[in-house]
Image (cartoon, one colour):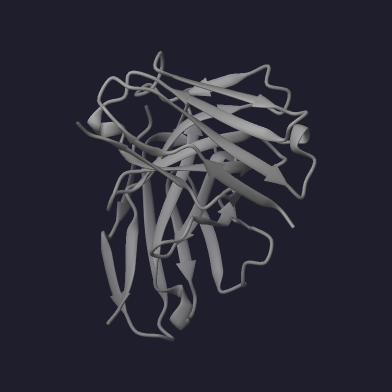
Length: 121
Length: 108
């Protein structure tokens, strides 16, 4: 059974940093691209960042480029998102999602339950 | 960035009725990169359709997707009680992946 479990969220002050993690199980992690997608309270979905199975290619939304860094450790079946210089508008539930095997941006077939990041003083 | 506009914002229907949800793109989108999701309160999204018209694993055949270019449609042929939720379309193009703002399907 495919499982994705996020962690690392919490309350952080504006300008602060966090490292989000996603532990994957139930599939060959290195064979799949992964992404982070966030959802502000009461709002819609926003894609944040993606990474290829090998980790050699990374992709970012314009809204987070230069502040967020996606990475993965295939030996640990883990995905990460380093979030720096946080702003109030970054407050959201952050989901880890597995991309379809046919391509990193064609759709996300498994999602974690999310981790909440709250940016507030 | 390609903007996806979903309409209507809210669709009020009764169980057994047909639901037609629209997703319009600001520029042409490759059908290969158009997907639809369902999200219920407090839950993560669930993939319904990918490649504009392909049902994801385990998705009932009352869900169907169609369209090309800038206009895409998700149809639910006969609404079941568990289908009342928010639906999002998603596309990839111009090096950015974007979601539509969502359509809420509520019980009339």
